[in-house]
Amino acid sequence: MHPAFSVLVFTVMSGAGYGLITLMILGHLFGLPQLQDSTVLLTGGGLAFALISGGLLSSTLHLANPKNAWRSFSRFKTSWLSREAVFAVLFYPFLLGYLANIWANGTEVTGIAQLAGFGAAALAMVTLFCTSMIYASLKTIRQWNSSLTPVNYIALGLMSGSLLLAAVQSAVTGDLSSTLHTIAMGLVVLGAVVKVIYLFWIGKPAGSTINTATGFTQASVRLLDQGHTSNGFLNNEFGYTVEANKLVRLRVLMVAIAFVLPFLLLLTSSAGLLVLAAILTIIGLLVERWLFFAEARHVVRLFHGDQRV
Amino acid sequence: MKLGLVVDLDTCVGCHGCATACKQWNTSGTIGPLSDENPYGKDPNGAWLNRIRTYEVDDTPNSKTVNMPMSCMHCDNAACVTVCPTGASYKREEDGIVLVDQDKCMGCNLCSWACPYGARELDPQEGTMKKCTLCVDRIYDEKLPEDERKPACVMTCPTKSRVFGDFDDPNSEVSQLVRDRAGKQLMPELGYEPVNTYLPPRNKPVVEMYETTSLKDTVKGWVNKVIAR
Image 1 (cartoon, each protein chain N blue to C red):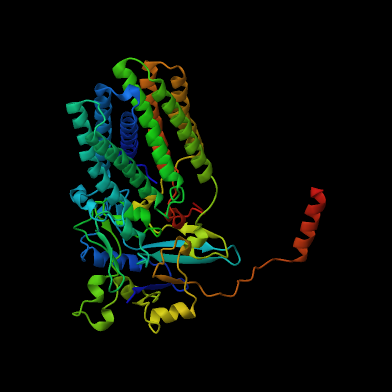
Image 2: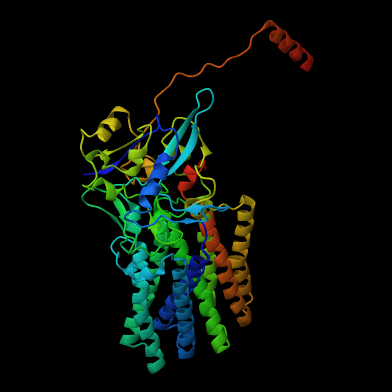
């Protein structure tokens, strides 16, 4: 699949924002001592707001006819993209209510704080789940059509969010919270495990072949002619091909930047390096999302001569 | 009613007449222009609703060249419709035709991702998704003579490899062809239940391979073997 840059930015940024806001609100409401500080909460909330809003705006850039984007709220019953749009908008009043309450009344856990906070945290996770289901629901792309896709999106969103939360907390207060630090380390390990399982899983041959695509299941089938002299929409959108050795190099780079380096930086327990770890993870996840698209092989490729997807 | 096409892979000669007739009719049809980018330039690109690909099936001497025209299959279980967030994509209750409302499409490409048959192409100028309409603006047009109320691709096919009809009617020409010739659906394992059906090529006698067996060649072969040892 052709990786659209606006979609990579959208999924990574909003994923990190939703992960950050969910962990921060839950930490605050369940009484984590380091998160009972309104400056930390407002900074984290502001950062999450910026990441999510920037991501959502970026996602509209890949639309070829954005003047009809408002109609995307209308097919909630069947379309995961429509559900994502609806929940993404529903999330805002809860987030703004929660942050306004902290700004006005401080960090005391009141009924309003709980209502707005738990609502925002739940909607953040639901929106992230809907985003992942847009991809996971496509039967045409074997590498996406799996429960591993939502698990990946949610685990990596929480992972990058936890690093951002630890970084914000240490940058604002000047000292490192050991609880947030431990949570971040645990989520980095979880994220890496989930991603590696995914990489092994997509490596197994399965799914449709050129034989099932053309209906000639008793003999070998080879493409002789695509029927057009230059690439069309289908070639550009689905025919995206990257050299196998480049993919391997990028996978190694992705695992190093997104998981290994941040983990090593976390081991140093230094507040300054924590910010660097969070930035590295975001960059690593951009590579991860690029690979998520570049390694996904749509079944239309079979009609264009691929033997299997 | 379940309208669709039967395509005969035995007789299709791969002339691209159906694709050209389709583009000609539909570029001024209900879904607006089918625009092209750089049509006479180095790298032409444009929206077509019908594509013909050519495959070689099996190996010599049993190999066969098969031309496979593909347009929208008007699937019973059309994921392109359910994934559409704006409601632009829809399947008509009365005849099963899948259409895109050009006034509602936002060009997110998700329906083209959901389609396993490559039936949808984004119009490079309009930014909306284009697809086969089964010539909905022809087949119900009462101003046309009755035998011309067929999709443009079916009208134009010089070898009558494309047949249009109602798959719900067991006595229609399409239903009979599917029964008699063991019609196949493409990629049935994905469960989209495509309506369009393909008739596999008939078996033909295999061409005999001519091998020379003169005395000179036999001796030459025998000498070569001895020398190689």
